Image 1 (cartoon, rainbow, N blue to C red):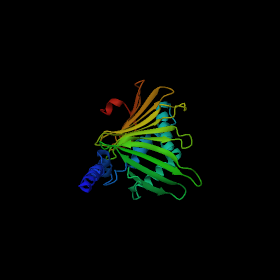
Image 2 (tube, rainbow, N blue to C red; image 1 turned 135 degrees about the horizontal axis):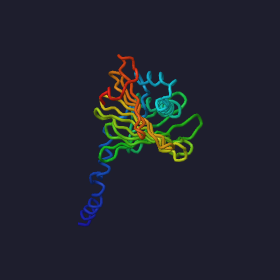
Image 3 (spheres, rainbow, N blue to C red; image 1 turned 45 degrees about the vertical axis):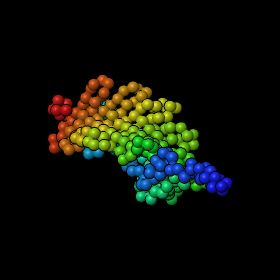
Image 4 (cartoon, rainbow, N blue to C red; image 1 turned 30 degrees about the horizontal axis):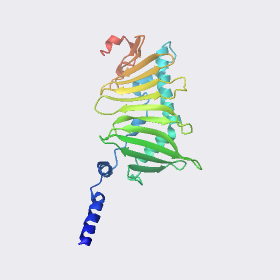
Length: 267
């Protein structure tokens, strides 16, 4: 009679162990059925001025159009920020698109191991309830210790979100990118995130409405903004001092990009 009682007690004691996994464990298991979508490299860069706008800006540098020159220099500066200061992590992020992801050892997310011959990096992702994904890249030089080069949050499809690029030695934020690449209205905004820099709060933002493209540069130190807007299909465009309201426009490529009254553009 005693043995059945002991057996029953043992079985009752084991019930918690025989229960289904907790809700969070079930969610973790479900999130590892497949890796999240990697955001595109376009989320980490501001496109360079191309076509008509680049030609027009270059052609007016000998004139008194200060805003034109300032706008072009601003775009060139931010392009250089990505090309030079962020070259290594951005390049390794591109390599991650070619790598095969595997689950993290603790099954909390996914990892992409990449190497460009000089640096090795580990890109990790962890999905949150609701579908957002947290990203982190740690990078190691020859004989160095792992350091965080960027973190980010994206939507499940990788089309909206933000990145924070860090000083790998100090661990402080240097530059930030926010992006929305859904639908016809798209944008990427790069900003100075280092509070120790004189340009803290300055930004360059690229936008597309499906018809026209625009670049807006805001100088936090001078507290002014300049916007370039142009139609890539015709080549016509506008330079605008956002705060002062002064605009300078040019005609279509077919008409030689000559300066025109902005009312001729019709937008």
